[in-house]
Length: 101
Image (tube, rainbow, N blue to C red):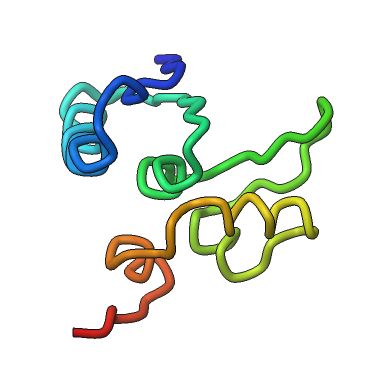
């Protein structure tokens, strides 16, 4: 299934809740593979099992969200990862870290 900005019309708060829980559940229940093209990096990190970063028609990096967060392929990928608001608990979990209380 190809999803172009699947949660783009939702508020940031509802987007995170819907995208991470619901998307994984329905993909699993229906046995679907989904390719999503969110333009929100936080959404991509929370939704994706694997993320492909493209620039100028060139594949720059492919990996899990934690792979990208831990070792961006270049400065352009690093900049993309700095674009979202500071990582919350969900992004910290991708790195295996606990968020401060």
